Length: 479
Image (cartoon, rainbow, N blue to C red):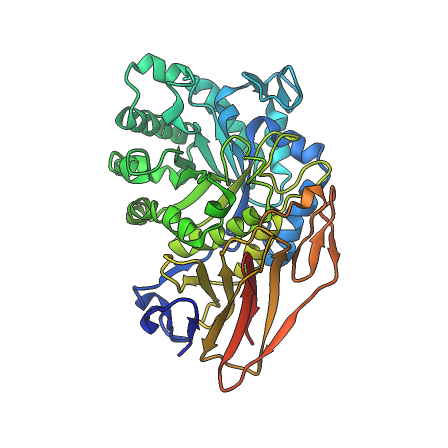
């Protein structure tokens, strides 16, 4: 029996105990879910995707760093607002064609050619491609989808439209022609397009459906699934939702806030489970619109990234795609042309924690500032734990800490890697230092640096204690 306790919080032991090697899913009071080989993914804004892959040196190395940890290239998704501004042009040799007043502007309209799909096909991992539904030109979208299917052996799914609840506000023809654009109207449109595209490509399990951003239940998978017949569902690969929690840095990194935010997807997850289809966060990050400069690039956002990915996975969300927008104007991006972002370290820590795991459980109930996750192997044996102290530390005054006491440990010692920085406000891109197990990633290249630091804590009579500072997390490697 493995237990943990925290001096600052009083929990019922039954919430925190699990049986090593037992049937993990028999414990209904725990979040226990099956892990994807690479649960942490990346989303690229549609028009910016070619630039990330041809003009940003760090892109390949940052993605490869994850692959070296998990053995699987992280999944990527190409889409966003500009996918519903994009028209396929079979005659152009360019990846994308558009004009903007400033390099950091997003285009109001653009075209893309077959080479766009050829570039996506070079990525060693799986790819979700978002195509246009807003312009209501299904023939053009089918033409693009056929090229994607033909050229991309790594194609996982196709999206048909991005965040359709905003189509009326954005002046998209499909909504304006409909007159009334609400969840039932959108569901009818999605279902018709799913059938048309699936039949045109003769491909089942093809579409990433949903892709809403407003919180369920008004817009979401539960509402959409209720409108779908068996034939429509046969063309669906998975269901997706978008999410940008926003707020202050102290609120964003709060474990209780993160848990509450993930809980809004429970009904959608349950509905997706009835179809046998996966559920993902197809586009997400800290603050919408490229992020907020006083929140998104900070170390607190790195801790949010880590805890959010772990909580999502433990809730049954199969993959979480963190969005990367306009190159050069993207506060939440993990990397750019010249610098790294602190959130990359949180993503790397979460990836490390879940790497090689088959199952994950959240042992805490999500109502306090402390988080405990357990990652199990295929035989149900605990292999790693993550401990997170989300108490906010600004860098001024005394930095608090919390002791996590574990019982029922097997072996003589536990190895520890620490995700740490001077404060929640530390920014890597302005010269601040963030480390994970002593490791750093070079500005502009994402090449690993630093000296590895692995702490070793002795286990005595199956017990060990771990001190985690405020605004800090640790990954434990069990023998």
